[in-house]
Length: 127
View (tube, rainbow, N blue to C red):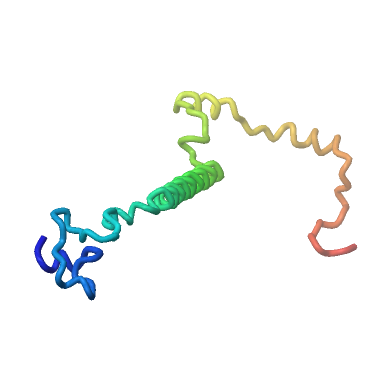
């Protein structure tokens, strides 16, 4: 280790230690902590727990967002998804089966129990 690196290590470059040379491992012989450079690992478990919580929270939010999008898709009417697949021939056949017949309308009106002399209904108007 050179001079600047010795000053960064505990005991190296400290006041009152000027005459003492560091030992080969970079630490002085007196009671300094030989594991000082590994002290950042002291709270590694807490750090790992926090990172894991953040990842789980992010995963939860992504899952919730995807569920919200899925629910929104279900609310929208999408013809390709929501209508049954019917061929043009089937639609033509159904249209051919439809007819308009005025002959039955007089018979329906004769059998009706509605009052033909009644006033026209207008919403919000009281009679």
